[in-house]
Image (tube, rainbow, N blue to C red; front, side, top):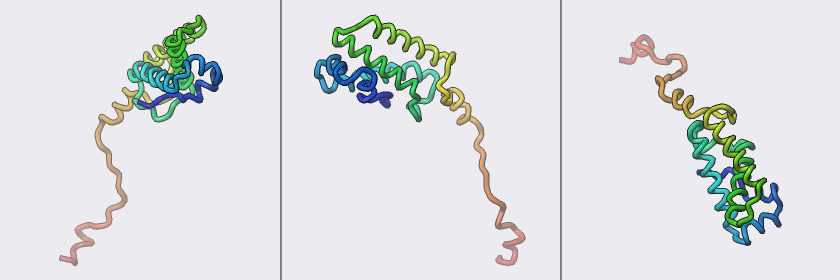
Length: 138
């Protein structure tokens, strides 16, 4: 499992002071929240995409930040209506991604499986040895 956001992404969204309040000074709290958010995202994306994602689209990074901040606010008893509404909107987006209503523009897991389940194809250069070219050697 890869984390879809960094602590710096959280700082960029809400600022260092606000993050310090949400983490109650716990240096590992932000990391745990990012891991929890990434795991939650994987539950949805795993239905449609090959995990781990080869790249992290900015949409997924933003969803991860929103969900991580939601879990931090919940742990810090600092839940606001805005944080809750943003979390619900993020989950709705993840549900739409899982159903294929919207797309990340990445290959679907189903299509990737189809591409690997077919016949093997080989390509080679022109033939260099033949019976005629080897006839005088025997």
